[in-house]
Image (cartoon, rainbow, N blue to C red; front, side, top):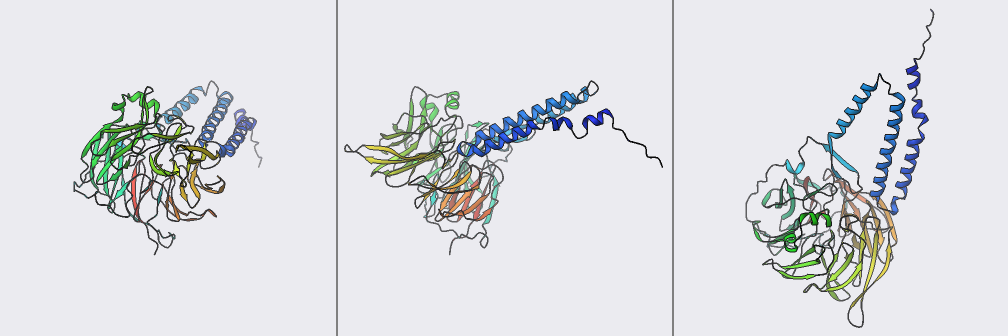
Length: 536
C-alpha cells in the first residue's frame, strides 16, 4: 500500500506550535518576573499597591499579546468572525460588576442580573418581646473590642484542643450588609446592618439567632472600595444601646424595646453636606460610641471651617456637653486609659493621635500619625501598652510606633517616640492584641508577634488576610478575611495553630464577639454563633 504524504496548508504552518507566541514569549515572561519581584518586595510596603501593579502589568501583557495575535491572524475573510468574537468577550465582561474589593484590592465580581444581597433579604420578623439589657453579667461583651475596649477577654478560659472538643454551631442566618460587630449583654447581641435603603439596629437572641427587636433609619452608605452599610459596633450600657451610623446619625435606644430615646445628627449639627462628608471621610463613619459616666463620646469631624476631634453628649438627653480638639476624624474609636497617672481619652485622628480630658475634652497631648481619611486611612486603635506607653499601628506601609508619656515639672504630659518601624504591625483594617509584653497582629494579612518594648519581631507566619483578632486568656481567635476562624496560642516563642472552623463564607472584616463561651461572628452577608468548650 502506498502511503499518501500529508502536507500542511499555509494556515496550518502559521498556527502550528504557535510560533507567534514563542516569538513574543518574552513579553509575559518579563512581566511575570517584574510581578514576582513586586510581590517579593511588597512586604516593606502596602500589599495593595503590589496588587494594583500586578493587575496593571497583567492587563498590559494581555493587551499586547492580543494585539499581536490579531495583527498576525486576522485576515479579511476572518475579520467578521474576529470582531464577533471580540464583541462576545466584551458582552461577557460587561455582564459582571465589581461587588467589592478585598483588603489587598483584589476585585470581586458578581453577575449584574443578581439583586444585591442587602436588597434581596426577607423582612425581619422580631418577636417583640421586652428583654432585659439593663441586667449585666460578668461574661458580657458590651462594646467594641470587649469589656475594656482592649481587644481581649480575660474572664473566659477556652479549651485549647478543638480536635477533641470541636466548636458546635448553634445557628447561622443571613444578615444585612455592614462591617460592624456584635455587642452582647445578658444573653442578647446587638449589631447594625443595612437592608436596602434602611440602616437597622437589631437585637438577636444569642442562643437561637432570632431577632427580638429592630430599629430602622432611612439612610444608606455605600462605596465601591468600602462596601455597603454601617461600620461601627453598638455600645450597651445601663439598659441603653448607643450606635453611630455610617452617615453620622447617633442613636440612643431603649435596650428593652429598641425604641429611640434621642437622636443626634452629626452632619446637621456641623452643617456638613453629604458631598463634603463623602470627600472627607470616603468610607463612612465607623467610630463606636464610648460611654463613660454620663457622657457618650464619638469622633466628630466637621467642615474645613470647623473641625472637632471629639464630641461628648449627655447620655440621657443627647445635649452637647463638650467638644475637644480640631482634627478630622479617622476610622478608629475613642478609648479610656490612665497614662502617666492622668485619666484620658485616646483617639486616633486623620493625621494625629491625641488625648483629651474625659470631663472637658481639653487637649492633653498630640502626636503626628501619617494618614488621610480618604486615602491611607487610619483604622487601628491606640492601645495603652503600660502605665506610661502607647502602641500605635497601621497599614499602608506605615507600621508601628511606641510612645512614652511623662509629666514635666509643670504637670504637663510630654510625649516622645521610643521606636518606630515600617516593617512590623501593619494592621490595615484590624487591631493588635497585647499580652505579656508582646503584640500580636495581622501585619498586612500575615499574623505577627512583636516585642513591644523594642519593636523586634518574634515571628511572622500564617496568611489570614485582613481579618480580625481577639485574645482570650492565653489564646488567640483569628477571624480570617475569608471567613474561617482559627485558634492559636498567644506565645512569643512559636506560631502554633490549634484548630479552625469554617464559620462564614465570603469577605469578612467584622470584629468578633465572645459572650461567655458563645462566639459570635458576622460579615456583610451572614452571622453565626458557636458554642465553644471551656477549659475544665
